[in-house]
Image (tube, rainbow, N blue to C red):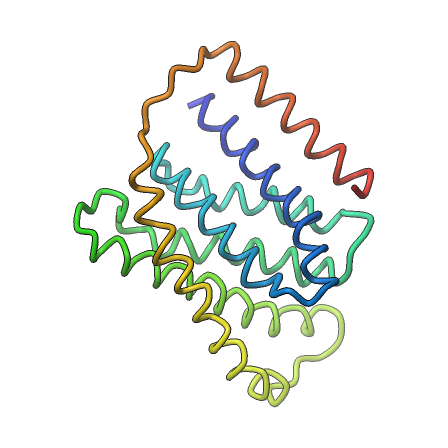
Length: 202
């Protein structure tokens, strides 16, 4: 159990670092940051569920990444980004109540990857468009409706990435030969680096 908790903190911290660095870079250059980062989030969550098979772990990872994103000293729309990240974790947990990682059919793997990728991006984005205005100002339904076709259309890219990524994740061997002492030490170093980089605004 301790190793799984460490893994949750490790992957959540790396995810948060990527959101604060790569996510900001893509957003500043209008390169589909939401699609790319939602797809990375799905890959992280699917891989850790496949590797550790612990329900709730991915929501914990999302919470850690969301906290890092929210308190990042640089970047824009910190609140909406952190909300989106946490919602993505909750959506994944809802979809993965069924243990899809036990499926052997390649068709099912492609299908669940596609569904997960699409829903994580689309529902996460929609939830952000609703929750953020409710917190900071006022929610207007017509604003959401006007953006809905674009959100749902862009979700197709996340669908395709998920359909390709999940079967590849399932093909990764589970066996690892890393000693516990090295595992904990390396994890501590990576977590520390991730948090220091975010705090420093790198």
